[in-house]
Length: 108
Image (cartoon, rainbow, N blue to C red; front, top):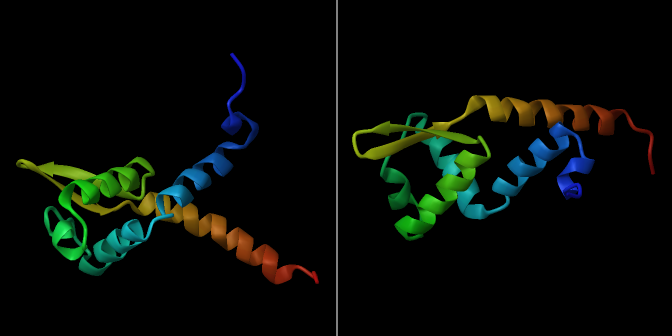
């Protein structure tokens, strides 16, 4: 079996790409911003905050969770979501390296 496209890149490059893809939709950005604003685990309130149907919101939550940007805990018959700090630490470190490099470059 041949190599997949992702086999040609480092684990870090693949991880950042997965995270960036999950952040590539405005509804997902809105969900992240809402979770940051409320600063607590949220169950059903997310659907009330977005102009989207419940199944659509659920799909966006699934994508964010699969990328590690949010985590979900089951409480009764609902899943409560909150920010996963570890993944944002990875993003912070990645973009800090970029900013440091760009700041120190002597380029056109």
